Image 1 (spheres, rainbow, N blue to C red):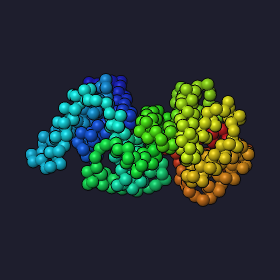
Image 2: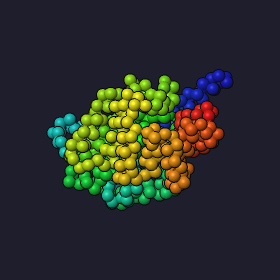
Image 3: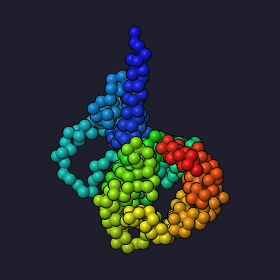
Image 4: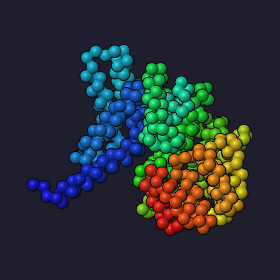
Length: 430
């Protein structure tokens, strides 16, 4: 008979294994889905096989332990599922016959890839192919973004809905319709030729940007950062820069991501608790990454088409990166950059960040006046950003009761456990 200690240990082990499954899925899902899409030629079917592999992992890893290479394990199981499905079908229609031939051809190519000549115009990157496929111009832009965030970033429909302040049902419908459209059109799984980049590049850059944002400040879960997502976004941005070297937005986006990521080591403490910008140890910033970011911004500027949204955001990040401290930051310049950004890419999120910069440059009362205008407009109703900023500014003005109420309201609206804890600690101090 199993004693209570043994039973408790078994439950803990199972819970630990489940957390590991979820963590691996967050990191590897895009590559698994991309690999399966290349093999079976069907976007939706590929995701089904990947999900079936995840179900197998949830059943087996708590019992048998996590394999040494969990990503490869999931990919192998997904491939077996694809083969098993093909074998179960007694009569193959033309589509399944094509899938069968593709599987055999892929096995042949896998065995001979090392002997193929290098072609600079061919990108051997399944994740990038996945992004370009999901960003095909046959899909509406909002569907491109929702679908890519789902399959590349591994975000849930709830997380995507929160990011865009949309109903979950709306996001679900966009993703389902997008998958059906891709399947019906039988879109090739490929990076388009250079001549065709223009119609997809804007959406691809938007998706890379949003994937990084989720890594920079996770919208839900127990971690403040998701460095796996941020690193993947930076990698994709570098590949896109190499593909389209004469497009300033590609270099500007890479600059922004490098500069923002340079602060990662100082943004959390040893326990994963967030450290706000004013309290960060700037010696822990990655100054090599700062130099790369500034160089990428200089390349974007050198192309000479004026600064767009990514370049303006990168310039703001550069102001922070070169400042010795929060007090010595050129806040007036940051306010001017946010004003330019608001004219190029208007957004309530930009307006709130401008309000913070105004508060630093001209005092908390001036910043609060801007935030109050945003709150009155109601554009970010239900989002924690406005009450969290209002609470901080009210606190600086000594209006503690009001500040506490705003911070508690913000904590109730956030789905990230670390962010919630920070807001509630501020409320307690108020």
